[in-house]
Length: 511
Image 1: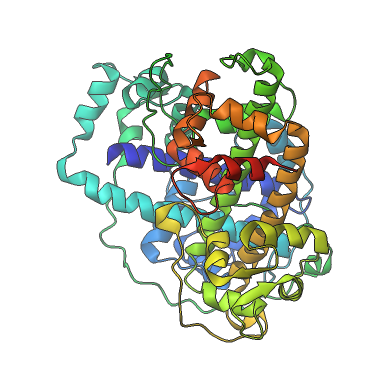
Image 2: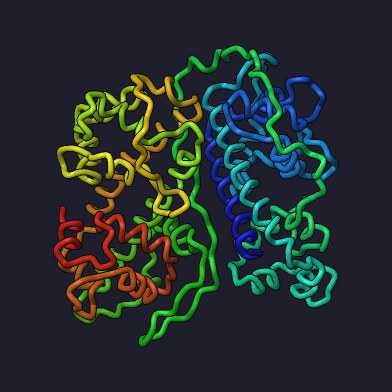
């Protein structure tokens, strides 16, 4: 339970920083107008009712208690008030120094108190708070379970070895996580970045504060009578993939020729995809490759290695973007399907897809849309069961069920609130971009499909499975998690059988 909580805190920080980075790219992202938008009563600070009011305006569920914990997260100096400085420190990118400085120096714009923020900023900020609240709910549940048999002082002294502080290396070793993940955790627990953690800081982040007097029920807040900001009439690039890949890593095992050691993990992510794959966008380091295939050229192994890294990285981005949509209370997959299947035929063809996406202001070429139908359908249409798989995460807790009841609608606004519509639009844009990305990756790979099969099925079993991909990557000193391997094999094998036959591999990798 403790390890789950540690992982969730790290995942939360990673996800939020991805949103910060995306927000910072917009020229209209500035802390001063955001502070003005949240602090509607001009207190000079943000309180729980300010946050609940913002969430109510954007149709995000938020109780008084959840708002309390969200403000506690934002209160960087722990003085009980979320001031401008606190907000700036928690909304500016943490992992990207250049983006942080550029955003901090950006000239703020003047905005009437009774106006929403520009639409892309209002939407992005609502996604930030939605993600934060989602993790708060998960963390509070874990903390309640943890309290049954947990001694924070014993934990502190076990890690610190009876010293005054916990060193970051000792923390990483104790929980068997990467130093970079320990740094993220320390960053979440501290007011200032440091390589050591005190007992009070550890207690503050792992245990609930006394909030028994806070009412668990939603406070009834009327939607603010805010006017549309004139900036909303401008053209802008919508947010893409606001839900970031989740990072939880484990200590890497050594590989030997006889066995492939298991990497202990949560089901989210490992170091190789998020560090190495991004690096491969810039260069192709040959030093990573260990060639264990006598009949295959080193360059072929390198090419396939690069492809798999980039493929899993893209699949994680796509899969994680589905999670916020699935958790929306107003989202019904059958209702969404009916928007495309306007005639009730039970399938979506290319014309249905074109008309349906236009309702979300998405216009793509027929060739792009045909790739989506080919991937998630039979090349002619997409059935409802495959539509569910297309928009559903492979993570069990975020998988959608086929619903029979639905609301017959002609426009998205009849069933979904604006934030949910943004999630739907972002997901479909990312689905399309993923198909284009995979086509480009396959062209870059430039290997015959039978050569690829020979590399993966090196012991000539006649089929491949997750173990074979894992063994191949382990041989390159890279250690994927089960979640990452499942993403890859599910992509290749739509029927999701444990074994993938040779014909399926050949067909998938053939241009």
